[in-house]
Length: 236
Image (tube, rainbow, N blue to C red; front, side, top):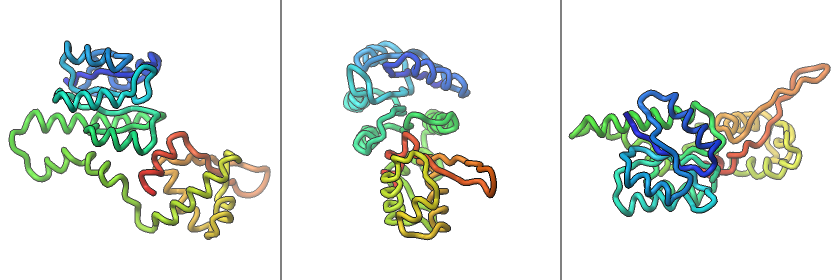
C-alpha cells in the first residue's frame, strides 16, 4: 500500500483530492496538512510514501516543502497538484525532484495516469535490486518528458504554433473564436489552422464547442482553458 499525505490549504480541494486518491487501487490517504509546517511535523511522525502538494498556500509556498524534503534526504516522493502554471514553478518543482505535475483544473484521467504511473514506479523500486534497461526507462519516463518538456507532432512547427497562440491571445477578448477568426489574423489557410487548433484542443489548451445555427452546417468555436498558458509554454 502507498501511503499518501495531501498538502493543501483549501479543505474542500483537499477532500476532493482525497476522494480521487481513494478511487485508485493501491493508495491510502493517511492525512491532510494545511501548511508546510504542519506537513513537516506530519512526515516526522508518520510513514509517508507520496505527497500530493499544492504550490499556492496562504502561509507558505508549497515548493518550500519540496526543497526541505530534498535537502534533508527524506525518502518521500511528491506529485505537485496546483494552479501554478508558470514555467518558473514547473521548473523549480522538477529540479527539486517532483515525479509529476498536474495543473488545476485537471481531468480525473490525468490524475489516474499520474498515480498509476507512480504505482508502477514504486513497484519496480520495491521489488528489484537490479534493473533491466526497459525497467530503468519506465522509471525515468516521466522525468525525461519533463526535461524535454514536450515534443511537437509531425506537421506542427514551433514557430507557427507560437504565432497562432499569440493571435489567439489577442482574440481572447471575444472569449469564443472560430477557425476563420484566427486564420485571417494569422494569415494562414483554414485547413492548416484546423490542424493547429485540433492539436491545441488535444493537449487541453483549448476547448471546442459546436454552435448550431438555424440553417447550414454547425460552426466550431474555441475557448482558452485556464491551464492553457502553462501547457503552451512547454511547447513554444
